Length: 259
Image (cartoon, rainbow, N blue to C red):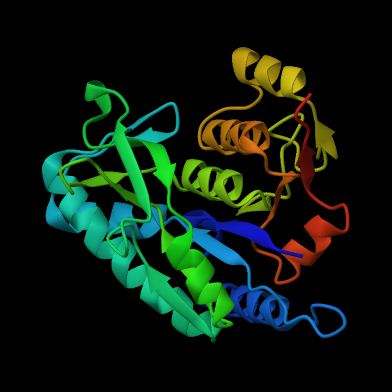
């Protein structure tokens, strides 16, 4: 099965867990494609929130969030691009047969400024999957950082969930959003209130009344957008579990429904 995996920054902070998850992704890439077919490696789109926050703090740059999106100054986006580029290389090394890339590789992701209030934060306008397809055709896992370019080639910080949803929509493949919770919770304060599925109307209602808040908002919105663009399925699952993707494909986590 060809899929896109969003690996969240908050799900990769523990080194041992990260290595275990990377091994799980490597196994997924090596699974038998069936018959004479070679398996199609997944596309991994990654964030890097905790690493970005640490780098911005070290640089003395102020940062804050609006509806789960990091307000990004021109000075901050330079730091963010540096962190994400290095992180994509590290993750690719841990996964194994993989290549870390950013939007600067073949201009594979472009965007426009989302809102001047957010600064250098982009809304994805186009995904060119040619470099992703070329890497997969060679048996390599593309590890794509959540960065995009504007029309002038300037870097824009893009929410990783939105980036993964856009990639899934462009490829017409399902997407699994790995995060640091089991999925979407009916009550964010109750870990045992996992929702097995969530329709579009239910998701929008929960965003409106605050049950879906913070970083889960762009995750759920990205899932809905991916479905609208042609992704066959979207699941929010536990990225702390080395077998989180397999469990998500087998019915675990929260499956977001398009209607």
